[in-house]
Image (cartoon, rainbow, N blue to C red):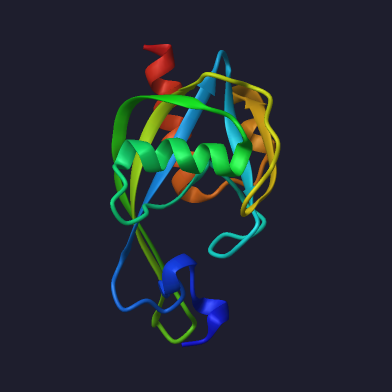
Length: 153
């Protein structure tokens, strides 16, 4: 295995032997959502919600809180499970390049001053009405749409 394909603890992220389990966190403050610009593949350069791989021995909720803190510098309180999704990316030959099982949460910020860290190249609070001007991953767009629908109910 090439080291460029390995994540922390030697886990192969690119062309994995099995799916990787990760969390995603939709953090909502008033009429805005916290976005991070992905600094690594998959989806490098696109905006998404904070998230990443669950570490061995870590609970889902602890992983969600840690990933938000690592990528944005803020602390959150997990409010509820939003759902579970697949993110499978195939190369031009049809081989599975990335495969994540994503467990997505809604969270409330306990602190709000964000600063991009870890594998996020940028992070910012974006008003729901301004989201259309951002290149957001398909999965994050679906999650945010679900949240905005919940907020209007």
